[in-house]
Length: 157
Image (cartoon, rainbow, N blue to C red; front, side):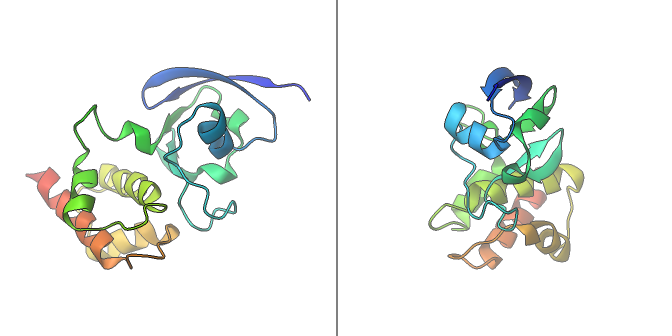
């Protein structure tokens, strides 16, 4: 099988990689590029653990073929912090104890960041609706929602 050359931007950095036409974006991120923050929870787009942005749109990386990334911009959990400086959402997740095992956390953070970029003043219902595609089996959702709302309030100041 021939491998395809893909040129893309990941977390604001130009990236080239080779992939098979059947490989998912998640597989390439994790296995080829060693960006292991995005997790595979279901491989069917139902859990949100592999959430990334593709040209600013929230997607499940397990449902996107890597070849579809050609010429596009991808945002992953690895791009949220700037060096040692956590993104405000990451800090609020820690402050609110909004994580336990950590499998779902990267997907929730990427999704929440996407929400706040679109809507800096969401209601609780809007946060819950936006994050409905992300599943957590450990924390429940209240601490996660509180962390997002607290981040939104802090970022508006």
